[in-house]
Image (cartoon, rainbow, N blue to C red; front, side):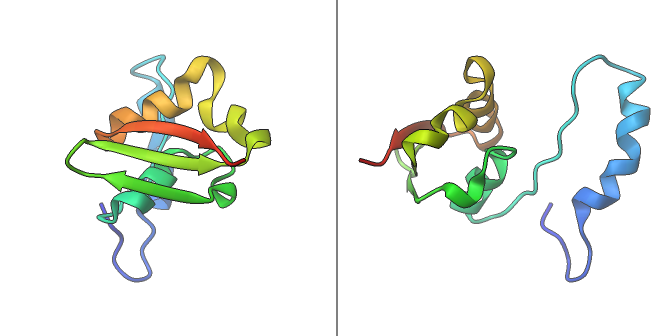
Length: 102
């Protein structure tokens, strides 16, 4: 959900993380939603250093996004075993292709 002015939905959900953890062993993460697909992809790629993203090109018809990052940061965006970018792809319903800048 996008927040109303002055309301942070992620901070509102954090207190419930502990009670949710009692029902499952899965890790719970909160991602800030945005109707701007580029911003939503950026939020979904966190905890990678999203301030290092150089450009996000979204191809809606192909359901794909190309994310340009510095070569030294690519590992952070991929995550362990590619899990970070795979989870971001699922959340956004877009195939995310990481590219490094020359």
